Length: 113
Image 1 (cartoon, rainbow, N blue to C red):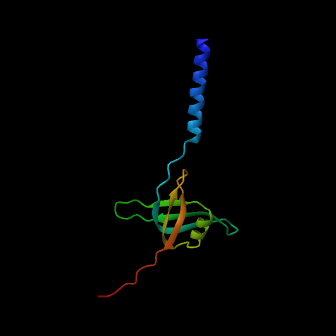
Image 2: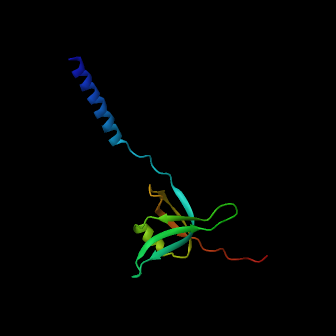
Image 3: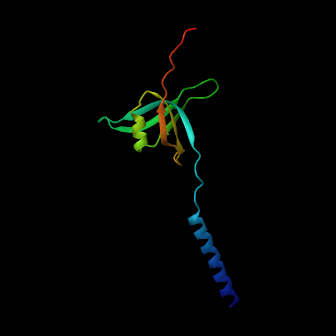
């Protein structure tokens, strides 16, 4: 009888632990800001297949390329191919930027003293 009670208790512990793991929510991902040049890849039919933001090497910082999720915002960002932008969003598990907002950075006019 004791072993039946132990088995039932063990099953309850396993069941509760399983439910707790299944319900575990992921922590919210921090917002990131990426600044660089929009780069678009298109197929032979001219359809956008990939978007990224390339940041050139500056000083000690290496050049980087941040892939962008190709959702509605990613497609809108693709319209700025070759332009300098700053994009804000969250990184997915696949290490792609899910863009929430972006803006084109216009070069500042040169002034002479």
